[in-house]
Length: 217
Image (cartoon, rainbow, N blue to C red; front, side, top):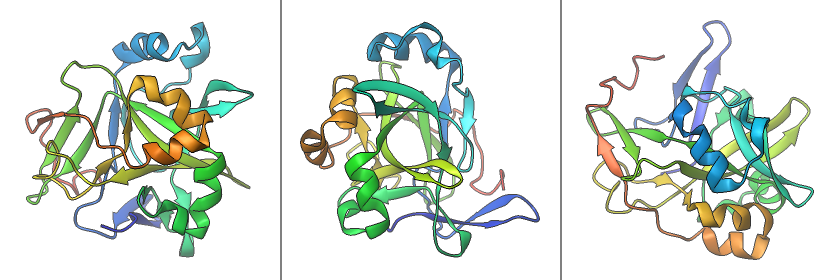
């Protein structure tokens, strides 16, 4: 599966996917996991006040973590990098990210972590499936961002699917364990190795919320 690109029409403020099975185009952040994220990543008291809870879609401005001044810093950044013809690129393949001129500088110097409670994929019948950790702990999605004239904008990296995902989709998000977050953000050498890591075991739930792929467009 190629990099996912979303075509936008300003008149209706909607997104139209180029592919029948887009990868990781929505995720969910539960408010009750804020404290868990704060504890796991060592975040100070009020610094998660800008965290959007509920469902997050491309084009929105969720809270992500970046590396700044040798520290992990939360910041609200827009999901999606503007590509050719004002298309919105929302993810990139981890296996080829260094081969893409528009991605190379970001993955080298501006990596980020996107916290989530769960993320959604759609199966071949376009049924929405929710993926979460079996223990209910946060999921840390790996990505990178560009600093553009319109502000910072990020994409989520994808990788080949593991046993939890392969019957649903041919890709899955690149997911960091809590102990890998700091190295992903701040250590280029380790980050290169983490690009090839396998995803964790995940639960999938079709009963979480039945929603057709195009119901939210």
